[in-house]
Image 1: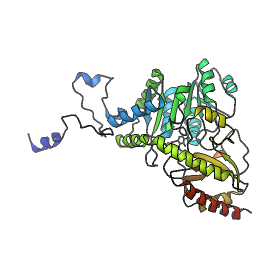
Image 2: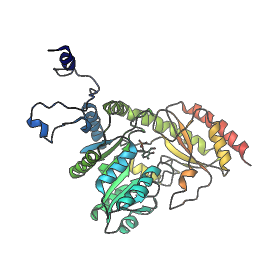
Image 3: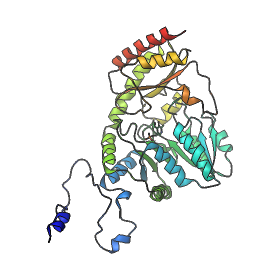
Image 4: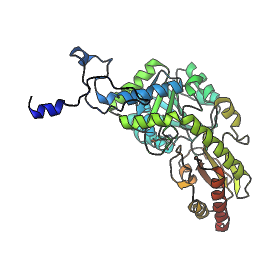
Length: 386
Ligand SMILES: Cc1ncc(COP(=O)(O)O)c(C=O)c1O
């Protein structure tokens, strides 16, 4: 053979790979089929976009964690939410969405779903499940919840919502990013779809985007997979490998970060500059009993209200923080803070809080160092008050 041809064929691995702890990272658009008949066998992986070894390993591991029959992967958490909605809804359907939903999900509902003839109605997170489901119309196809909400942490009795919705053949879905598919396992409580931004706790290192939708009903799993197939979305094997690596240490990180967040929250609750704490694992939290019933542990994302003060003082507090980064994400090993109030403007069901809200994500640092950082920033807040 000519050197050109030898170069193209050389190095192709003829024998099976040795076994390693993690899956092989197969990079490939082209999949070489064993024979002509297999080319059109739709039960086989025939193209790299369907996912290769690393993606399949991640799907298996997530399915085991979430007690799912199948897990569909998406290139981001937001794509998991939008992709699942696109796969399950059609023109003429109605979608009920909790008012404290992640803001970009709301943006998609308002700007895209409505354009495709899906009507969207928001409901108060504190609406009792009976009233919520009674208020559904003949056209209601899906109820989308997020509990706890990722800014103000309200919870819903999703188990009861699912029980009632099932009687009316309405699907239920939740953004389970706070529960990470580990602390909370909605599929075991009758919720049809558990969707999460793996970008947060599962990835755990603030360096990779991905989302997942897990379901138990094989027909639903197929619809979600078909949705991704139709849209042409794919996740890279390198990202899937990273995600699986994160998943291995998820329980240990969540346990440590949850405890750290409680230490910080307990301390904050005793500070004169703090008016209220919204942390599901604190007995003072209004939905604490629901959290205790449904969750096996706590995540490390919570919000607190400062004593009343102007926006400039809140910004002075945030700017004074040295260990907490200012950033919109969460779930990584590092602590983060944001002001919350600018994001509450679009809500339909406004709630009065005793002061401006700050959201903290507590990481793996030593809590005493974080507390010291918060103490000096609260001093700055106090001195910035008029
Ligand atoms: C509750 C929640 N859901 C979904 C997402 C979206 O995840 P991603 O950034 O991977 O699109 C986020 C991101 O902040 C989130 O906080």
